[in-house]
Structure formats: structure tokens, C-alpha cells
Length: 552
Image (tube, rainbow, N blue to C red; front, side, top):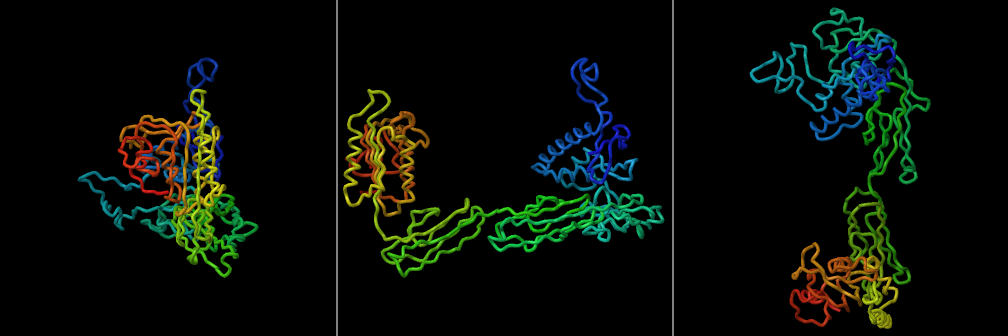
């Protein structure tokens, strides 16, 4: 950031201009606020002589704020830092320092606001015309020696030329109406290497002869272990371990060879546009430059595996597809395994639906995921969550037999050959909180499949309250199972969602609690509660029986 006098637009004596400078801004004198009263620089509340590059910087910052506001209004988004820089430079007014032969753009806020969004270079009102200008094609007739195109400025206002080290020629080369020597510009240059203009005059700012500076360009690429994962050993071109010594404003087309594997983007640092994510970029060496290319993973890793017990399937060697690899975020990947032999089924882990026992499943790539398939004998397993509460807040609310009943249910089930105690969860008194009940039910999900059986038993208090969203009760009441802590109770809709999250639809719900009002009839509807033909509104258990689709 350099400074110019506000009245003369000349670079100030204290502002040093160099090639690394981007822009200039008005700085001297500037009118600014001051400490109120005599304690400040001025007896008043404002100081009229604020100066220095310290006053140029806030001017530029304010200009950026205005440009960003204009960008939001004109193109519906804010500009990136690189875009802001380019707008201020490309729309600025050229100012040449009298101390050194260097020209830099002074911020032109009006032009910067107008340069945010593409617009016709010439505005023509109705019934008006400009000779040689076609408003439809936005082009000039050849005989006018005018044209509308990007001049491809390099640095301050040099014209891009391949022979002087840039990547392409400016359209402003050799298109003037006369020879450069004839119009008095034969000993001036538009090139970064200070070679004089010859032939037809170039349409651009002409500089006096100068001695070009030289800078070094260092390039490096870091694969961060991709060589070990994928055998990927990239190179960056061009590259010289000692740095390339090049003339100022030389441009290089950077490329990574070979490009990174699928699922990885390039992270550039030190280029003309570090937002580029592919294997190609550009750098203009306007100072000593260090370019680094790194890699970031943009896909999720899927690891797939199969597990077979050789003791029960000694000669069975299944396969799984796809093999482990990277997949795009949100991609739905179909996973297949060899069909299970007769009498066996596939148990999935890590898929969208681990309750499926078929040889085909899917996984949606929301994160790095491991999917594995286990072959197991076809069998029905039995699971239960049993809750009993005697001790409630306040002695008057306590019960005498709920814990005993729940414990006996647990004992009776465990005594049979069907119920493995490892598949049962018993929650008594203080253990019986809403969070623990939900965790107990949902914790069974990875252990179950579609043909298993689930039992939920509750002994304790229950009550009804106003219907909460979703508004779905015939009698406008929701029913609740009262938990031991008296803080957060289980609503019928919540219990329904938890049970529906299980892979099986073979379940029964036993509620040894008093209720009044109606319940949500849509979710779970077990039989065996002693009501054969209930009517909507008769109560929690009645509504669940009303549309029952399950059996015990």
C-alpha cells in the first residue's frame, strides 16, 4: 500500500514505491476524527491533517467494504481476496512515482464499483449511435482502430507478450493506426523486458526504458504419504532445487504430473490464484516466489471386508465388491457379497440398513466408512428391554411391586432356552431414565436382524398430557411413561420411533401402568394387552392394539 497526496495525486515523499507494491491510495491530508476537546491533536473534535501510509490503508479498507457491498448487490456474492485485489488494480488510475520510474494504480472507487460485474464498455442511449461501434456484438469496426478485449495487463500496466516471458500475447500488440516511431513512442516500451515498441504502435501505457529486475521462483510438491497409500509420486513442473532465476513478471504454467488420484484436490500456495484445485495453475514472478502444491482429500474412504468362520464354513471363500477405495460425498454405493449357502445369512455392519440379511446392501458416503459382512447360521434371536420403577420423587408417588414384577419378567425370560441374558437389558429405579431407556433400545440395533424378536416391558407410573407435535391423537392427549428422575419422561411418539429404529418388526410392548386418554395409533401396535376391539381414544394400549400388525 502506497500513499499519494489527496490534492495533486502524486506519490508522497514518505511513500516508497517498489515492484511488490499493489496499489496507491489518498493519504495526505485526510480529515479524521480526533479525541474530543483539547486533549486531541486539534482543539475541535476533528483533525484535518491526518497523513502517512497509515491514512492510506483505512482509505483502501473502506474502498474494499464498498466494493464488497456492490458485489453482493450486483452478482449476489462477496468477492474473494484475489478478486478484490484484481478489481482495485485493474480499475485504478496509473500514477508514476517521481522518485523512481515505477507506475502503480491509485484506487478509483467509482471505477472499482463499476468493474465488479461485467458490463458493456460503452453505454449508448436510445436514438444515439457511435460511429464504428456495434452494440449488438460489442465490437468496433476495423477502420476505427478500436476494439473491446481484455488487454492482458501484467504487473502495473505492461502488455503480456510471449517473447518477454508471459504465457500469451496481448490483443493490444501492433494494432495502432501508425508506426510507434512515427507517433514518438519508438523509444518507449510496453514490455516487461524493456524492449522498445516497434512496428505498429501498441495500444497501452508506454514506459521509459528501465533495467528489469530478476527474481527467483522456487517450486515444491508434497504428497504427504500418498506415495505409500497409492504409490503416487508427483512432480511439479517447472522445478529447480536452487530456484529459477527469471526476469520480473515472467509467467509460468505450473502443472503436477501425474495428476492426483481420484478423491484428492491440489492445494496451491503462492500462485496467481490459490483457489484453483486442479493440477494446473499459473504464477507471475513479480517478486521472489515460493510455490507449494499439497493435497487434500475430497472424497470419503470406504473399506469393505467379509468375515467367515472356517469352522462352520470351511470351504466357503466369499468375495465383496466394490473393493476398498474412495467415493464422492453423498454417493450411494451398492455393496455385494457372495450369496450365503443354504442355512446361512449375511449380517451387515456399517451399511445404510444393517438389518438386511440379503447379499446386496447400500452405504451412503457421509464419512469414512468401514463395511463388513459376516456369514452366520440362520436363527431367530430374542431381545428385551425391561423397566421397573418403585422409587419416584416424593414418597407418596412410590410403588410397591413394579421392580418385583420387572425383575420376575427378566428372570422368567432368562430361564427359557430362547433368551440369552446378554441380549436383555434390565433397568430398575434410578437406572430407569429416559436417556438410559433410549440407549438400551438403540444399542440393540447392531445385534438384531429382520427375523429377531424384541420385547419391551414397563412397570411404573403413566399419565397423559396435551398432544405435542406431531398433532396425531384422536382425543388430543399424548401418553407418557413416567421415569424415575421425574425430569424427562417418555412420550408415546418417542417410544414408537425408538422401536421402529430396530431392524425387526417382530416385537411386543407390555405396559403395566395406568393411563387415560388416547395414543398415537400409527407407530407400534402390539397385541396381548387384553383389549380385542378397542375404539380410538380409549387409551395408550388400546390405540396400539387398534391397528396391530405384529405378533408374539
